[in-house]
Length: 233
Image 1: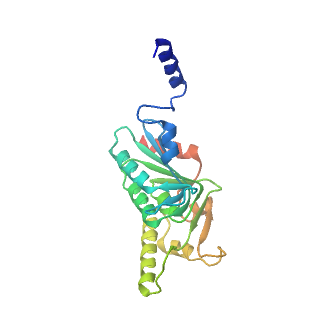
Image 2: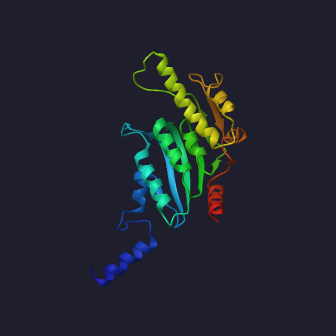
Image 3: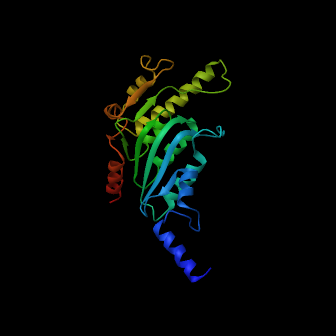
């Protein structure tokens, strides 16, 4: 490569630093896993679409793969450069075990964490949202809390009911231990019969999630960024 070509390459990289780097492009990281370092201090993680567990979802489904998120959270904990984590959520829920694994990992980080619910954080997205040190929801954001659902063969036996109940207790216990809402109230919301036409549960919009004690504050990205910087400082 000539000196002129090298100079032109350096100029293009300076004008657009998010393009290709030796360890992979920033744009590619966002496309593949929804993660990127906003600066040397804050790492961004997105929980988008459906949380995918041990089984792969159809190729046309927008998913968050937990096998991508868990190693990244471990790397964040071990990093000396990253000082805080911002989690953006717009999810319909998904695999319970995978969602709880992500939530437990976020909750156990020693770095400050802030979550922001955008379009929605439904079902198993709720534990992920409350797992952060501080949580926000936009005014039009929604959260749907409902009983555990199961796909595939269901055996009509008492053990099946006990398994469902155990799983719901794990979810309710985690949520209650990471927000201001009481477990009894969360169970009431989960088993409400008067709101959803084809299901049990409750839809909370914006400030309602704050009033119920699930989310800390109504706010947007500006508020979330301000909060994560204050927690780091």
